[in-house]
Length: 200
Image (cartoon, rainbow, N blue to C red; front, side, top):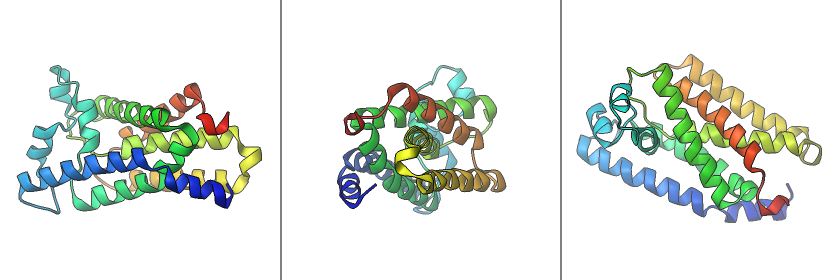
């Protein structure tokens, strides 16, 4: 992308800011309920809509989405929101506001379903599954436009995905099923929807 396109990307951040605001407000609420700003109580996360297999099986399917707006600690939300702030505006520029939001929300739900299937005994929260969905979407864009954007762009995308996968596999308490689910579904949705008006 050239400097003009980069400026446009940086200006297109309304969806990202709204998502971040929702996450931050919910984090503040859960921190107050937990009486701890650094670490959120697991029972509070469960009460607020964390993804837990036994409850989802009883019909509380809304947890598959609400869990994506909850975080277990300050470090957890900081890194997720930082990643979203970097990636989100570019996704909005490529796919447009509606498709961006569609990719984000459906990736979040898909990530939760994968988590529900492969890790039903744990309480799962966090936006990382949806963020992996955005990575999948930008990967599809990179593959489709690889001749125009060059190898360096593609390598950056693949490196980010690879590093995050390695971190997930090598670190405890990481919901890798959610990450893979989000990545796969985000890529598929992006493939089906196609790019926004900027690329037509």
